[in-house]
Amino acid sequence: MTRSLTLHLRERTEPHDCSPCEWFAPPRLQGPAPIGWPHHFDRGAIITTAASLEYAEGYQSEDDHLAAARRRADEVGVVPIGSGAGAALSFLASAIGARSVAEIGTGTGVSGLWLLRGMQSDGVLTSVDLEAEHQRLARETFTAAGHAPQRFRLIAGSGLDVMPRLTDAGYDLVFLDGDKVEYGEYLEQAIRLVRPGGLIAFDNALWHDRVADPSQRDAETVAIREVVQQVANDDRLRSVLLPVGDGLLVAQLQP
Ligand SMILES: C[S@@+](CC[C@H](N)C(=O)[O-])C[C@H]1O[C@@H](n2cnc3c(N)ncnc32)[C@H](O)[C@@H]1O
Picture 1: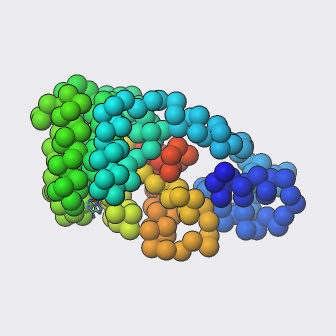
Picture 2: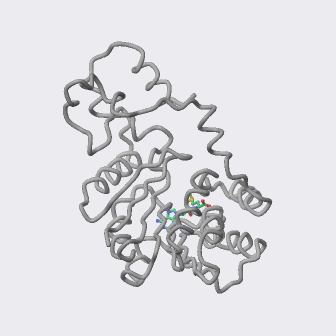
């Protein structure tokens, strides 16, 4: 069981001082709990066991192409998106009929393959990564899975160098999975890149249970925590923090 689940279960069954809980409450719920709600777990939260999380994670199975991309990731030390979050991305791309998707952090193509499969059949994935070698492996992944070279545009470079060169409002979905410390700057760029009604998604929004733990103050955790808050506070965005995999933060730019 993960640390946060242990924490939730303990706090739900034992009396405790509520003030630290406010810290854990999502941004829009911060502040005193309404009368009659003794602490934030009574705000509609449901306890999910590790077994259920695992069940949900495996709900969409991965085929040999995704397995091969994961093996390539392992070989070069890249941590790809989990299968649950990959399936969620694919679903979102499909639900909005995405034709144009931008991704920061290609890796060896696990998230890219999930995205390509959800997009329209003539859709193009533009994916950026600092490491040319990762992109070589991603190209192998996409090609082996049967996607023609016109379906993906791989750009080697830093996300913050490349994003300003991409077209304003040119993307149906922008997926961010590069350098966690740069998430705040990715958000600014993504809001410019996504079309009205389009989606912005960040992987690792829960960052190995560290985001919800106030004692964790390393640069990556702080940057992710800040972007989660920023998205929640931005009136241009409607958002949801999905607890799939390592957390998928999804926001829609209001039409
Ligand atoms: C977590 S992995 C991406 C995994 C990929 N999305 C997947 O699911 O298969 C992060 C990737 O971001 C790349 N990266 C790190 N810092 C970056 C930056 N500043 N700009 C662009 N890519 C970056 C790394 O080389 C790595 O391939």
